[in-house]
Amino acid sequence: KGRNTFQIYNATIRENTEMQLTLENDLRRAISLGELTLHYQPKLHALSNEVIGLEALVRWKHPSLGMVPPGKFISIAEETGLIVALERWVMKEVCRQIIRFEQEGVVPPRIAFNLSTRHICQEDIVLFIQELLEQTWVNPNLLEIEITESLFMENTNQAIEKLQVLKDMGIRISMDDFGTGFSSLSYLKSLPLNCMKIDQSFVRDVTSDENSKAIVAMIISMANLLQFDVVAEGVETQEQLECLINLQCHQVQGYYFSKPLPIDEIQLFLQKAS
Ligand code: C2E
Ligand code: MG
Ligand code: MG
Ligand code: MG
Image (cartoon, rainbow, N blue to C red; front, side, top):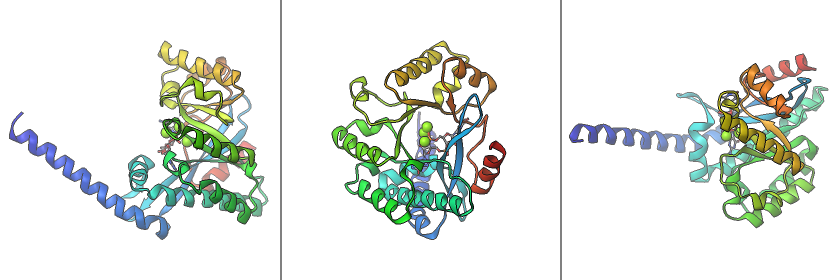
């Protein structure tokens, strides 16, 4: 469209790249400087409101940019490989939190954390988790790993083997954002999974769009047949909740119940819930 448009486009690209480089350099330091923190979001039983676990979601307290959401830096961390150090910090912090719960005389809830495909493909991931559990004495039943479908695009057999070992250790395995990747139905039957999380994009439209509702219903019945638990992510309204209950989905997570919160606020939430 001529010069002007080109310049604007160019400036945007440059700005993004610079931002990207700044974030990459800062992120390298952030992990060692203790700028990362975890927020926790509860997963609940839809009928009893009982808390069935928490999900740990990483946040970055950037010294000048403020609180940076994971959407801004997880992909950079994945591209640069920093994700491995980042998620190892997350896993250690989750175990430390479980120990703090125990020290405070609180029955620790199960805590889920997200593991990127790149990290699970690391040769020593299973060993790292085994050693972490040996060092901290954390009960593996209190841990849950959330993976995504991209893990099964390549490396499928190796990934399945690793997940099987982790599951045999007593760690729960959940498939996050289910329905957004390219799941092949043939591998689903052989996956060592405990749970599928219905992606929030389907939950968002479950009351307004018949196709979304059909997809949600299909995921629920498939999970039932494969004997996986099923959690609906991103529940924001009473109407969505009622619709999910009617579809026989009884485990839920979303702003309707609680946003991800810092640990002291989540502890208040847990006290009120019990
Ligand atoms: P996710 O694992 O699917 O987590 C759910 C995201 O949806 C969270 O965003 C959560 O705050 C948001 N959410 C929860 N309930 C609702 C709701 O009712 N409505 C809406 N609109 N959103 C809701 P968050 O914390 O920004 O995290 C985004 C993504 O970043 C996560 O998606 C996860 O994929 C990734 N992430 C966070 N921590 C880690 C990590 O340690 N490792 C990796 N690989 N990814 C992480
Ligand atoms: Mg998740
Ligand atoms: Mg998700
Ligand atoms: Mg997600």
